[in-house]
Image 1 (tube, rainbow over the protein chains, first blue to last red):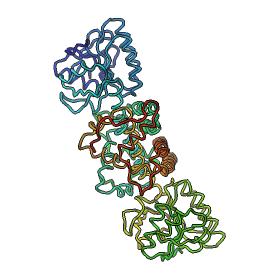
Image 2: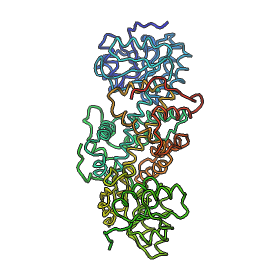
Image 3: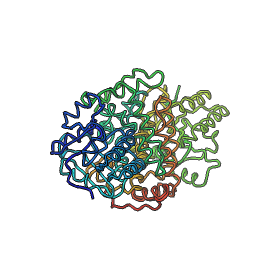
Length: 307
Length: 307
């Protein structure tokens, strides 16, 4: 039986999202653990500042946590789950394992095998929204699986946890289709606006959209905060492509979105952090258009943008 | 010198868009010509009903028209321009040639070579909006090139003609980036909603979008009228992919959009015409999800759609 009274939560690892989640859980009275052995001073400082306690290595974290949340870049999810399974086997501790990463349902099911073989309860989860800043914030933690009670208990600790269904793969599937609708669309609009800029057609395109074209404006609004996240989104787009492909749908739209984010990640725009002010849309498009083939270098906007 | 007084317009060919344009030009007093030799009875009937006069073959059309509009599916644009250039050489007539098709700027420039070699004035054009139903309707005819005066003269005959700039490729470029923003986005949303349907996550996704999520609703609204156009849009998406690729941007998002439309075009939904009522979004997604891999056949919507 799963204990639904949670006292301690291990978070792998305290990045932007992980430390935000940890901060909320700590603020609401939980013992929040990170495995900081061998991590950078920046990561240690951020974790300490958010109220994490250092459990040393993964063995220490697994031994002391009632529940472990895996919050990583998509490409690390499998390897970290293997480490956790190894720690469970070495220590005999079996905390509930919650797979929160933006990965394809079939990837989640393969990770489930690893964790189930180690004897622990597995919860599929998908996080929609940015890192939570305070208890009761605007970030949704969707979950699915045969027993999600331990994760649901975090509803009492400032997280907005919502059950999608009883199957592993549903919560991550929801994350995939939702991210396709937001980040996939942003990739397409970044590309077409960059092309318009390079072709000197941005003013004509915006005029065609018209003053009241709220749809276009909403799509464009998402672009300035994208470059600093572009590197992370490459892997996420590839996971969505894999999700679609497994269903028999074309992966190409999403592998193309991954291409766009790789292109953006290769510019100085991607070096900014969430502490820097976002570039303007004009700066983003100018930077991207300047990287295009041949004579498009240093492409100024020929007409002022009206948004 | 181009004559800017237009009396007769040849249209290749009188499909949905071509016959709509012809109807408007005829209603405003122009002699509108089609080359109906060897065409189907359906095409002949539609052309006659719209007020076209049959010029016989392409030679007859070129000899009698002051201006020729090429309005076709993208894949036919090059071959028809070659026919027109041949007719110009045989007959000595040099009507202004307006390339109205949804094709990449570099494709337009290659067609320009063909027409310029035959000695005629060439205009690049891009049509945004559906077939015009009446003079002064909501369809925009963007044009570009060193001399667009003959085409601009059609402003006096019920068409909304707008000049984008002096270069061949600008009008078609505008059409490409605009179509990416509408048809590219529709392809992505059709895919992600089909995936959500197949995964049983449509209700959860719509709940996440929320009642007031007008952006999502607007994207979804474009889907029911898409299947009957899907076959035509495949080539258009490939032209946009070529446009982006020539700039040094990834073609994959748009080749993926072409994949999606090919997938839709292979269903009975694509057999409908503009005279049939559009299917509902629910019917479109149900039909597409039923065509996916394995056990997704005949996928019902698990929760009622609230839009």
